[in-house]
Image 1 (cartoon, rainbow, N blue to C red):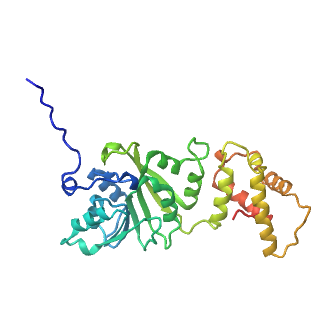
Image 2 (cartoon, one colour; image 1 turned 90 degrees about the vertical axis):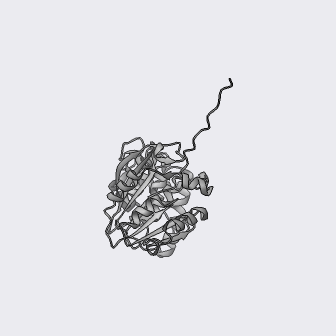
Length: 306
C-alpha cells in the first residue's frame, strides 16, 4: 500500500492566510505574534490614559489593538498599503476607531507628529536612522520601547572597551539613556527572522547636552573609522587633514581671521591632540567626556567638523 504523505500545516495566522497577505521581507515584515511580549513592552512604557503613542510598522495590528486599550490616541506609521487596509478593518466599527490615526508611508521620510511615547517592533533595516530620527525629534517624547535585532541592541548599550562599542553606541548614549529590557527568540515572530531580537528602552536626555551634534558626529566618524588605531595616526590621514583645512578656511573667512599661507594643518592638529592628551588614545576606550573635551579643544583653535 503506497505511503500517504500528510499535508504540512501552515503556521501562517488563519485570518491573514484567508486574506492572502504574504509578508514582504523587503520591508522587514516579521510580525510579533506572542501577545505576552507585546503586553510586556507596553507595560515597560508606563503609558498613561492621556498619552499619544507612535507605533512604527504596526503590521496586522496585534500590538496596536493593545495600545488602543491603554491610551488616548495611537499614530501608526505603515509603508505597506495591504497592511494599512488590514489594520483599518481590524478597528472598523469598534470604540477604538476614532483613537487610531494611520500614516501611510516611509517613517524615515515622514514628518512625525507629536507623541508622548513610541512603542514599536521596528523593521530592522531602518533601525539606526530611525533611532536618530526619534532622538532628534522635537518636542521631546518621554520614552521609546523598541524591538531591535539583538546585536544592534547590544551595540546601543555597549561601553568603552567592549567589543561592540562603536560610533552608534556613543552617539546614542550622548542623546539618551539606553537600557536592554529583554531578549526575544526568533520563534516569537511570523515569519521567524534569521536573527535573535531584543527590546530596548530609550529615554531622551532633556535638556540635551549643550553640543553641536553635527560637529560631534563628524568628530566621532573620524575617530571610529579605525577604532583600534591611535587618534594621532587617524588624524595624519591626508583626507582628514584636507577636510579640516577646508573647514578652518571657512571659519577664518566667517570670523575675519587672516589666513596664514604657511600654516601647517598637520602640525596644528598634532599640537591640539597632544595638549588634550589624546594623541595616543584609541576611540574604543574613550567615553563621552573624552570626546567632549577633544571637540572643545579643536573648536577652541577654530577647527570644526561640519
